Length: 398
Image (cartoon, rainbow, N blue to C red; front, side, top):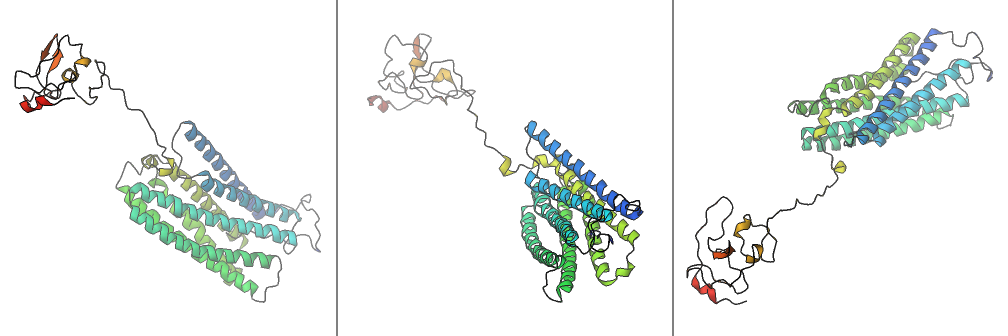
């Protein structure tokens, strides 16, 4: 997607304004190129408003954040808006003769256009590799594949980033006329070819990850809702503008005369639509309902709630157990009523011994209905065990 260079301009280094002249915008191809760029800029602006609106609605509804954070997708949208604004400004000023090929102002703005474009391309690929593909594998439960894609993708992305930085440095030096040797322009062209080819390979690598995640999610219908449907569109758009970059770069370097203005304008317009389609596809994938099944650790806030109060028809005494399932069988007479007389030391000479502090041991006696009765402790819904303790326990003192 090489940006269009400025026209021939007013000769002799003049900055005379040609906008007032009749022939300033009479070329249909020039007007079409500016119109297409303006249309894509408008689409990206609408997309930005949709992202802001959706983020606000989710926050207001108390829903979890999208897989795309503001510092990810938001920064990418800011970069692409800046790129298209610079591109339109460059084309308009070139048409009006305010800047022209070869002067300092033209070199500055054209360098800014190319740097912003390439940086936006790299940023978009970083979002797809390290956010979209990674989260898709996490949603599908394929953690081993997720780690593999992140590691290999990181290595591949670092190689492309090194070539990108070298290309941007040589581009800036040559556009500003810095003398770095006779082979400067040759090096610039070679780096441009290397970057375009490596970027295409990086796109293919991302496609492999998207397809693998697509296959994994196909086995989980509840998780793929709204997520996998836009994967083919994203793949087509990524291939579209990356293949265009490769074709344009190699044609400019090896077969420049085969390019026509009409063909170049159509090609650039299609590439820009593909670029917008990639951004839009990422947005549609991120808003899929299937992501509701993915709970991101950084989004989960600990929630503490007090246990429900355990009601009891009795007044708790120090001898009651709150874990006792049957309040009627608790051992303390204090939780039922006050015994008028001391309990007998034994329960028919066969029961549990009296401990001396007003409490019988388990399977002992309880004071109910105005008298001491036996019956032993038994959980709710079960019959009494009929267990009796040995008589020797009666000698225990407290």
